[in-house]
Length: 148
Image (cartoon, rainbow, N blue to C red; front, side, top):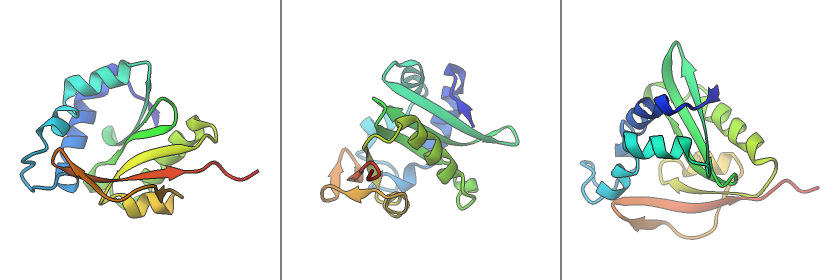
């Protein structure tokens, strides 16, 4: 696990784009063009170097296996694991990195339908109904800080 670098943008974009069938409503991505553009190499590069984002990457044997990002320190902006690495605990490691960076603050995420069970396992709860727009579906969720 390490902080993402500008030059990681191409690998991050490729990893996320390989997961599009898990996120788009139409199998071919029809209607989700705006969302897909937000995952292009150029967009990811702008996020990685942007002041409002924090990115970390997880690597296995020199291969980008996963990525996690926070926006404004409390919104889980990205949490993706390459399909070939699903089920190996990498999402938990990425999540633990982001959670530590949030320093106990309340967190939010717009969870893909596929990711909802994982986020519930991490302690998130839905704050509203499923939303469908721009060719994707998500559930807004929130993680409250631990009680003191």
